[in-house]
Image 1 (cartoon, each protein chain N blue to C red):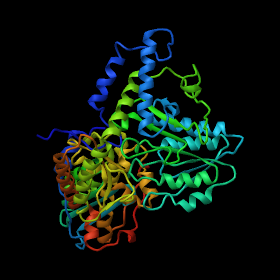
Image 2: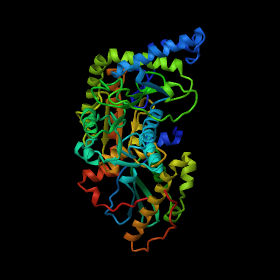
Image 3: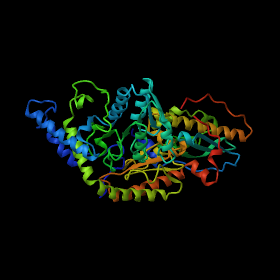
Image 4: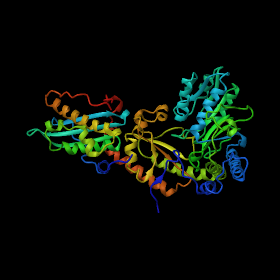
Length: 139
Length: 405
């Protein structure tokens, strides 16, 4: 199975690899997946508290090339979005953008889960109720 | 000049040796006869070529040429041996002993046997990948008819103590079958010294063509018989019908001859390269060798690079270097290697493994390049790995509640 150009590009030149200070109240961290499953994603957002806009996003991922690409792409899309906009990022748009084959859809689902987890972490830290999401597709 | 891609997946398959191809070519065109045609020169020529190849194959494993049944490959050999013994020796018993790191061709055949009313015990290997001999002996019952254990494992290259295994089997009057696909041609295998009664192997793992293999079936002490699984013209002494693949068999014979003549020198050369690769890669922090270091094939090493996922790792260099991984992502099942898990490795380490299989045409330059590429990619991916960061911060990953999917 050959990877798409876009996956290869994100793998070779990942965007926004790194770590934000998770002790800061305006940083939300989402850690999803499990080492046993072969995929762990950590996605972080830093929110501008006056505008509610995500001013920075970072990730680190343990996983295959598609998982790395999905999280790299997610951080790119998150930057500059408001929290409300960020919530609407759907895994299928990641699949389309990266041309992921069916066996790799779970990588995009994981990225979507990581976004949601990061947003909820941010909300929790700031005394907001955590959002409920529908169960994501089985992967 | 280094040419790409570099092939380090010789446990999957090997290229045909040019000398093998050369030997085969006339049997596609001029000498195309059917070895079963008894009444004209075309048939005689083909039969003669098959007889000669049968000798070459037999010689490599210390057998008599009459004990070689040509098959389409090791999967067929595994099926014929296990199902054939199960049916032939039904009056003696229905119990088979095997182990949990066998190739799927053996495991799935055993599952089939269970559906047919057979009883199979799957011994758990020790963390080094070898069976516990005391456990093996304890598993033998009055109705045990067969011990089926692989000579060498395809993922980690560990070599089973066949002589000790067959000694136990003899003591209890049980037949020994070995899937020796990975071992024959790579290390000295002698069916008499090793006490093996049936043995499957294949040409394409030893620089021969794909689609041809052999099942060794002992003819004396004891005389072993198997029930045919493919019926037809009664070829191969009635044990395997079907027109013989003459060019394939000729190539198989040639491949066996080359292995026999060159094994000693080749092993010396390859083991040096393997050790160089392995030693360099084990210098990487948190990298682990999988399987026994001593009892194993000379050309394989299987290493886990903790906190890096195998498929992601391969992607760093797989345009230029062909290896294989025990990672789930490489298979359709999403389950990591059952062989590595059987050694007691956690799923995380199984996901982080790479198998390097060196071969006849591997050069030192290729190994140097591989060391550099793998090391760089591991380092790069660890910079990107949340698990590596946690490990470096001293966080015990086992204490984290992971969201399982």
